[in-house]
Image (cartoon, rainbow, N blue to C red; front, side, top):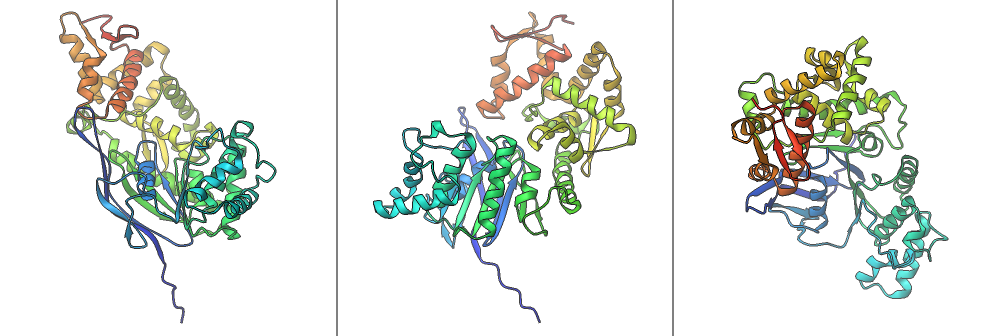
Length: 439
């Protein structure tokens, strides 16, 4: 008879919510009803698109910011400030440029009150473990991006954390450097050369999550919340060319695209159209990228629906670049996404086969029909005697639903789409939207 060993929890997130207050005093929900437990001897990935609250959650777990509601319990004790046993690696290295590698690594130990001789010994050992011996006296400006991030890892590991938190630690690195650092980190984990019992990391890279994590938590956005969890059964290290790995990647794409489709799919211009609302967070999808993506789909679609993982690989697109494009095409009804596959609609095929001028007309028709903000801007300009209005007017309206920064981003996307479709014109210097050919 086999007796299962009970898993030991490191921390638990309970009913977590985080809201921020806009300049107008409106509460904007960033995280809502987040619940999960992390156990010893596992690597967990928080996977989702930018803006879904993953990094905010990581900082709450680290004790760097406080939740609005709910709590994080580390070994049963509420986390209200940074606690010993949890260390964090940041995306942007966060090194002090006036300190040497050795001095940067010693910082955490110094903050803990470790005496000079002991912290020097532990720092040198951490530097050696992470492969930076010989660079102890170098300054950050002398190091490559990969080496600077290794310093960040050494600084986190030198305090012997039970839990290592990582916020997109490889995203600022080139592909080869990132792959090397991932391999070295997994080697440290598998050989147990550190005392770390758990790693929780944020990423928007699907293959990175599949390569490293024992469990993948998929985040939805607006507000950020857990949409799905996936337990990875295959052992580390994993071969990206293995059929089981490719199926895992495909399963993740299916989970992510299914959740997105349910959220943004508009079947017609009826009631669902109204549900989208003026404050919908339009995806960051540039016109040139959208048209190029449609062209790529049209060339691939000779054999039917296109597998998103294979398409992303062939176009060298990461999830954070791919999903805004698929979301935009679904919003405009140029494509549908189902179970990790994407298929052009009749409107999408017509767009792919159209001339430059015909594409603009097709885009304009779908934009006004399916995106409330586009129709609202056009109607506003139609009804003004001068057929003009300032961008600040529309920004104020958007700020009733979004933060100031997000309102600016959404309006920028809308202006780019609207100018391409020629449903309005925009003067950058004056910030005025107008009709070139008013009705």
